[in-house]
Image (cartoon, rainbow, N blue to C red; front, top):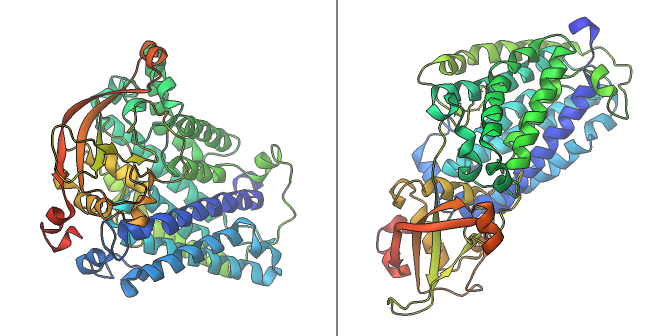
Length: 486
């Protein structure tokens, strides 16, 4: 350890933070996985089972592809996360604490990996792989009065480094706006799900946006090298990272990406640093058990071997973002927003109960929990909760048609059927559970109102129609497009 530093308190705080994120992730799975990727989901579970081998994407749901198994697994994950959150392994006798902790964290990892590998597009985010990778390393931290293996602390710092440095590199290599420092002129308006502060951040002076874009480069490209430095440099680097992620939390809704990065920054501290700011101190620790030290060394060898491809990718001119190089998501490559969209497009889904469509037909909009629909609605705060449908609608709107979003027409079918589980994913069903006769999807370009416009109209957004995404259709017409329409 650096200059005799200890990490017992670091482990306790880290495990509590990770357990909380696991709890949130399993709650999201319990509420959303079945309508999105279950037996009759928008991307049905059978598509996963038929499309890959178990070896390629292992999951419990490959073996038991049922909604019942999904529900049981999600709620078991919630329960086990709660046990980890309150620190149940620490209540056990010393000789049982670490084995129990390893079993608990290993079970959480296996359960969540099952959702990630079977979730298809709706689980194709970088923070899913990062939670799997971090959760796997947590298995080897130990529990009770024994000291955690220092090598695992370093491996957690290595995850944080790849997360931050990879994001910095992909920005420099990607969009010109990151190099000319104009990226944040657009980001707050065009990010997937803006929050209540995003409008205000967007209207900050251009000079501020230049300074914060430059600061982004410093924090992602230079600061990460200090994670491995002795104290207090490591802690200062971790503190800078937490402050940076905190600003992203305040100004956007990025699911648990920022929260997980903050949790990963905890191992940059030491017990001495944490004890100076927390109302508790670390007790005298017992030596790390030999079997745990041996397991940690084997783990380090595995991570080094699996890091070769992610590091090559990170240093490549054709760097991929948010990619797993092994089916267990053990060592991944990260990086987000290599390109920044200049215009914000939204798909607004509407329905009607009229039997015949005419120019006078009255259409009513479905409202979503996170993404903009009503220009007068203030952007909501939803993170660290993850609204998976809303995120995919943001991606879908980038294209003028649903050809690249094979789930979208199935989504329209569920609306025409007034499917309860799908409607639960929405903020408002304008038909109160009744079936509409027709639905359609209109594509708009959205922009934030200026301060003057908002003062006059009360609107947060201004929008203009740019096209029809899906023309008015009935349930029979969609079902006639093929057996997989639903």
